[in-house]
Amino acid sequence: MRAAMFRGTQRFRILETLGKGGMGVIYRVRDEVMQRDVALKTLRRVSPEDLYRLKEEFRALSGLAHPNLVELHELFVEDDQAFFTMEVVEGVGLLDWLWADDLGGPGLSEGGMARLKAALPQLVAGLQAVHDSGRVHRDVKPSNVMVNWQGEVVLLDFGLTVALGRESSQEPGGARTSGTQAYMSPEQAEGRPAGPASDWYSLGVVLYEALTGRLPFPADRAEALPLQRDGRFDAPSALHPATPPALDALVCALLSPAPTQRPRGGEILQRLAETETAAMAAAGRPSQADIVKTVAARMGFPEPAANLSAGYHTLAEAFSGWRDSPSHNAVMLDPTATRMGIATAYAPGSKYKVYWALLVAK
Image 1: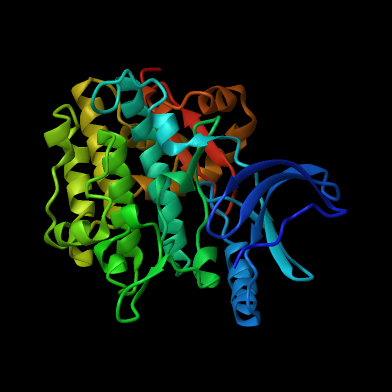
Image 2: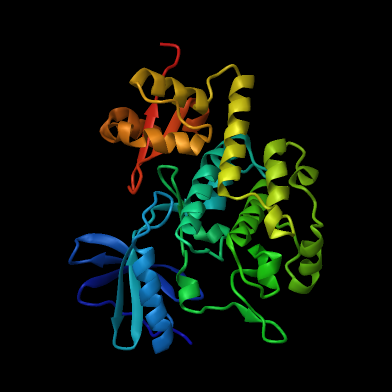
């Protein structure tokens, strides 16, 4: 059922329309109470049962704070309309950011590949945070991933579509599917329950498209599903031989037909860290792992765990003061900073990233 036209309220003044989706319309509005611009998303008319589920899910999700997840603000139910507010993400869609300097040839440019290597760990971290909360996104796709002007990846639309009971289609025999057809896993397409592995499959489709400029399977579901079940698709390297072998292998693993065969967040981050370490070593430069260990030793901290993301977490609070330093601002403006020996950390439970750099040669 369509959402009623939103004309603003005494508190929220409409500035512009940002987009439209299956759940409703997204506006940029001015919050006159908080004196800030926010994104406001209207929802289709919902039943009392759906509304109850939505309130419960929103309450839980609004407490989920992570640098790579959009920040939810408030849920409102006024008369026969429901809407919620969230932070405005100033930036562009993931693929637009990766393909910004596309020269018309196959595959990503050198700059695009550098941006992908900077963005991918952030996207994985955001999606893992959703899973750690006990939820599944179910609709990972490029339009649900934004990159702000500082190069930070922000995952949108997590959880609420399921709370509303939004379904994309119904299969013969009563099976229902949720998500976007081109990016959904075979188990989702068949109407089976989606788990975290379903989200990782969708991430694989997004990566495939980013690397090759096309989707791995045909648009027609009847034609695509048998290929998905059998894992029959051209590897990214078959379409673009310059694809880094590690990324090529990762995409193929994520698109495994069996959910149990797909790598999860921790394994993906470990793979990416090992790849980065090998690349830095080959170039004769210190890897991020080396930088983390060196800083830990100089600051008197125990050596971080082997898992690079865990190492970042361990040291994050110690370097939280660097947020206000000039070097922090300079790094945020450079999305390829990780190629220059910059280590990135997240302050646990904080919306802010912590950046720090160390010249190991000093």
